[in-house]
Amino acid sequence: MTTIIIPNGVTNISDDAFYECYDLTNVTIAGSVSSIGESAFGYCSKLTGVFFYGSARAAALDVFNGDPGKVYYLPGTAGWGGMFGGLGTALWMLPYPLILEGGSNFGVQADGFNFRISWATNLTVVVEGCTNVANPAWQPLQTNTLIGGESQFTDSQWTNYPIRFYRVRWP
Image 1 (spheres, rainbow, N blue to C red):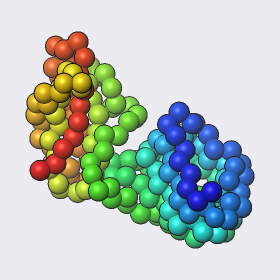
Image 2: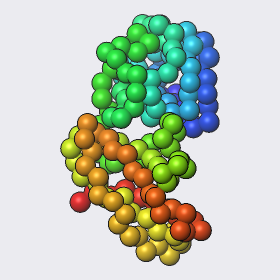
Image 3: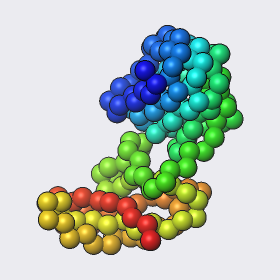
């Protein structure tokens, strides 16, 4: 096993879950994971990158004991410092913009339907919407500049449609 993707819906990675997986090189962790146990990825001697889709979560101090590599996080996610679980951290720059799931500002709010967009600092993206993905007629809804690598999108008109889909594109 060289790559592990922890899918959305998983909330906990237990102690020693992938301990001594010597061939493991990359791990991607969904934003739904809220805690990571002691030595969950300990002594994975080829581990080079751990990629988080969410904010920093509760983790034992030695999640990655004995591992090389780095922990990568998305712009706009919270709680990241210089170290996480025993590894250094760095900003994860995606080759495309991403709608971040979860968080207190995701979904229906008093001011409309909300989500955050993450990508690269100071680039511009366009949020588009349509009501039928089988036969889409995408309409631009808002142009956003990603200050600090993120931007908040709010659709105050979402209740005017029986269903609405979103996508993000860049020029």
